[in-house]
Length: 288
Ligand SMILES: [Zn+2]
Image (cartoon, rainbow, N blue to C red; front, side):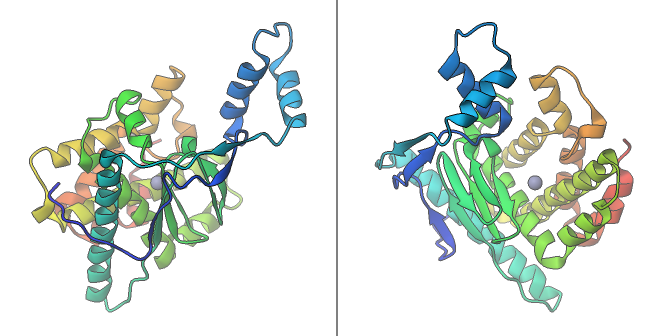
């Protein structure tokens, strides 16, 4: 991607700051089991349940996170991220203006290890996310190494640009009321139906990422769209489930298949037309 340095007062880089304490526990069930195995490894004959209970009794476990200098590569990556954040805000303010509305920009925070948000605390294992309660995008950039090494996405800056645009897409859904509409529709529904609504919401964020790309073609270099498509493919529920557990369960999907994610990103990119990605239309296109 062709980019120049752009700064925003609502962007915060907390990497290397040495936030003091790091909570070891709290990485979800996987984190707890992994820790249990580290702490109690070799205690054969005990069930996982017993081990987790023991770990819980030992809570909280903390260690100090050291302050450190960021490498040059890390600094550049942070600046690239900030520029993407600004490009997204510029594009959406323009779109809102065209629709006689005013855009309220989100915040963005780069973190390492763990972070406290208005939506609760999260670790790097959560992956990039948007918290609707504080209107901020949270991202640990090391996620992208994992996306490449573990999930097979092509390496490249536009994979990062796509993910940022997707998260800002959730901010758009938040400020125009789509999030609230989805939560309302999910009430009283079966798990599978509620999941399908989540899928529609995620695919619309992909569509919005495509809309952003379509309005920033001047920034694109050869291969950029392929990088975004490869990232969208890598984070499809079917791709992740088959890699992690070897089985695919569509009723448990929350983000959509690789094919759907690519389709809706490309739909936004090729049409540049917001009317093509209405939430009802996306929802009714989901076949499972
Ligand atoms: Zn999302």
